[in-house]
Length: 389
Image (cartoon, rainbow, N blue to C red; front, side, top):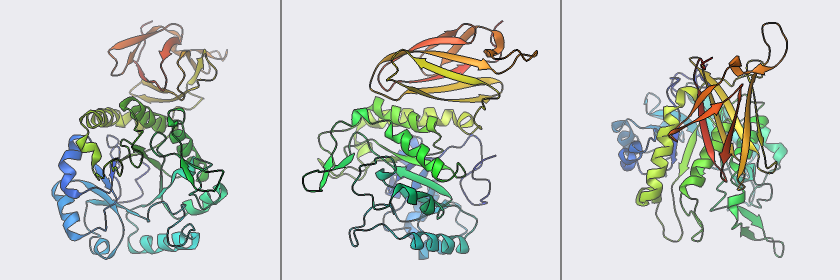
């Protein structure tokens, strides 16, 4: 069942739909983002306004926005699929130096739901969700489950290449980490934490970097961006949002659109994800059905994975969590033979798995295959049903 089925005016429950979002963008840019596969605006600057909603409706772009006076006057507007709290309530606020009080989050949640129970409420947390040393976080980790009670969908942002921040041991000020290429796995860490904080009961989304943001000396490469997206999805993220603003070296609120190389890469990633929406929306394959283990030759280069089945085909999505290359053995087993003799090779057969969007196949023999992983490499496999005996 879709995680959005409980809300009549919420995100679509269509198994072919997957939220690909962009953070607080000008509605007039909606056609350009739609070309890249974006289907939802997450936040509206100083909005929503009637003009913003009218523009998004004209372009058939969905939106998540604040439930302000205009929002309350548009409860019948099908463009609105969710309401949102203010951004990053877990971070220190400039006016108080403290987090948004939990009482306000819970009170606002009840007020929003009381006005409109047909749409979910979303909260987006800051990088402290995964960066344990982030000095801007104003709540303890054990407080997140309480804050999570104030939303139906949880989201968070961390930007490993351009915006990891650490405390300055000399004076307590904030330092920017310049070696984020070793920290891409933080995106998966945050997703898994939010899942645990809710007892795996609520959808989790996350925000991905694709610009310099505030860091003129560092920006993720297209390969690093793709890796972050798939690390997130493999960890269980149910929606991807792009942070496309850039403040340094120049100020450009839609910097992605003026970067041809990254723009092309983000479009390709989005369309790849959307082409696999039906797979991503399937429930996880349980250990009682199929058991997958991936053993890298370099134990310091773990490979994360997720498995789904659609129409009898097995889809296996994998990502190298580190900046170390390795070779890995993939083993796929079914728990029991008909005589209950124990683990058996997947379908007791051999065959070729399609490596999606790589124009190659991977040979599996008796349920085992071996593949090479460059740093942060992503490989997506489809094992057709049935394998040839």
